[in-house]
Structure formats: structure tokens, C-alpha cells
Image (cartoon, rainbow, N blue to C red; front, side, top):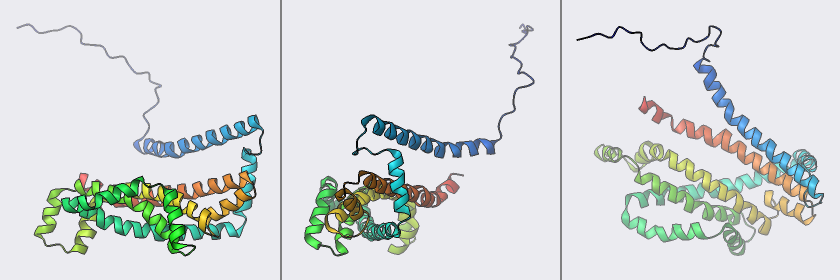
Length: 282
């Protein structure tokens, strides 16, 4: 048997002045900064593109970014802006709470019982296909200008998407957890608190995002057609005055508030709800 005595593969030497690798904490901090920087870059590109388009068209129907910024400053300084925003938030919160309670019960029942799934499937399908404008008009016709009008419109538009998401999440729940709850004779309240809500957290937050996006659109339509207060009513007044910059300013402020809720509230709650999954993975 012969032994190989020749030289092995030669690795290139790294230069002595090569920078040391970044610490793990620094790399994590840089990754955290990438999200806000990317969002800021998109907003800057959007505003710049809009302003260039307004300069090219030179039309009152396409106001420049400076005109919209002036309208935003006017609205922020007006106490009525916060009053209208608070009224809209109250209506959305009540309607979404009603939709969440109904969707949680129906979605879990559909995931656990084939009979319940077949019974509620047509209602969910109809709810998903009916446009939000139709719900807004029907609720204005049925309930007039009472508080139940926007609340029911938000609930009817949000509940189907929430129900479908919860139903799909229920079907992916670990059967061993269900068996454990049965063996230990969990009450309905304990199952909801310790089993369904933690295991359905991803489906709940995914459905909540979709349901809230539908709710914001419907509530504005309801307030435009049948209410005298709220964000939609204010947008309608700006439209009646042919103030396009005012309409866009209300839209931009409303979008900023929704983004603040998404990044400041929903994502924080989602990370907190998913903490047990990270602990279990370790």
C-alpha cells in the first residue's frame, strides 16, 4: 500500500487587512432596518412619481404632492379630523368584533363537523362574492342612519373572509391536541382559551388582516352614502367641493393610520401570540 506524500490542495491566504465579520447582533440590527428602509424607499418613489405626473399633466384633477401636503397639514390641525376618525374607528371596531365572534363560532364548527361545513358553505360563498358596495347600499336601505347601519355593513363584509380563514386553520390543528383536550375533559371555555385561540393564531391574524381591509372599504362607502359623520362623509364633502387634493389628503391620512395599526398593533400581537411556538421549537 502506497501513501500519497505530495502536497495537498493549497488554500488561498486571506489578506491580513481583510475586515472582520460583522457581529451577529449587528447583522440582526441591519436586517431589522431593511424593512423600514424598503418601505420608505417605496413611499418616496410613489410620491416622486405622482408629483412628476402632476407636473407633466398640469391639471387641477391631478394635484401635486405639495398641494396634497398642504391639505394634510390643514386636516391635521383641524380638531374635526380626529372626531371623524374616532367615529369611523368606533364603527369598525364594533362591526369587526361582531364579525369575529360569529366567524370564530362558525369557523370552528365547520372545521370540526362535516354537517356544519356543508350547512354554512353557501352562506360563506355568498358573503365572499357579494361586493362591499352592495352591503353598504343594503344596510343604508335597511337600517337608515342609525349606528346599526355601519356596524352590520362591516360585520357582513368581514365575517365571510374571517370564517374561511378560521375554518382552514381548524382543519390543520394537531389531532393530538384535540385528543388531549378530550382526555382531560376541557370545558368549552378552556378549549377556546388554551387550544383553539393559540393554535388558530396564524389563521386568526391572516383573516383579521383580510377582514379589516374589507371593513375599511365598506365603512367609507356606508359613510359616503348614508352617514353625516366619519371619514367617508368628510371625503364626500371634499368631493362635493371638487377639492381633489382634499380627497387625496384624507385617503393618505387614512392609509397612514391603517399602516400604523398594522405595524404597531397587529404585528406586535401576532408576535406575542406566536411566542409559544418559538419556545416549543427550541
